[in-house]
Amino acid sequence: MTFGVFMHKDGSIYDDIPEVHYQFPKVYLSRAKQMVDNWIVYREPVKLPQSKGFFAVAKVERIIPDPDMSNRYRAIIQEGSYLPFSPTVPHKVDGVPVERDLANAQAAVRPLSNSDFARIIALGLPEDDTLPRTGDLEPLNRVQDPQMPFEIERPIVQSLVNRPFRDRAFRRAVLNAYDGRCAVTGWKLVNGGGRLEAEAAHIRPVERGGPDSVRNGLALSGTAHWMFDRGLIGLSDDLDILISRQVNDRPSVEAIINKSGKALAPERLALRPHPAFLGWHREHCFKR
Figure: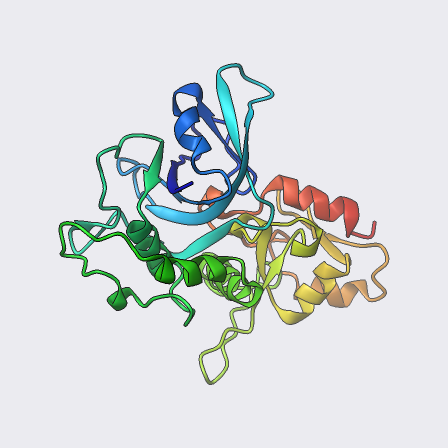
């Protein structure tokens, strides 16, 4: 088993939902099988305008034939393993590739060395003391890296399944995507210590199968978060803010909703709430 890289581009011919599954052609099957029960990082192509570089990490649970297309396969992502990077990790730092072994740089599915994996995780998920600091890794101006010892690799992997660590990473990614502004009220309140008032809310809760993905998240003020979790407000697929008929003080709720009547979402489509998660919330939480 080995770490790996999955190349992903929004709007490509492949039916990818990075939080759920990754589709690939048969030519990569033997390589992808080596990554089962191990972690991969998602990367956008270098030539993509405004490429995010490495943007998330996830664990491969199994490989199955694609149910919709012959000669294609799906890597099924382990539920609850997907975690977005914030900041995303550029292809190069100080002019040196972050991914050092570029022998298969054009391959959509390729192995990743332990040292490259550790470096990418440290850069993309930087705020946890259980991870090596970037400066503790091999210097970025080195041409080659030795294999990362297992003793360093293990705490990194343990962190990826640690709930407090994941909560902090999810909050950072969501608040960065929304620029710290509540999607419902439009407020961007900051206390004297510089802490944002907005909270990171899961649309589909983790305990009910929701991923730690920005597309399954909203930046919400405390009151809006409370109402959303209790189904007193919801969102249409077009991000119209819905108010439950069970709200006892509708004028007060309407008063705090931003004037557009729609959730304020990131400009980049890949960061906006996914209709699958919004639909789940309407079906299972929203009180009609």
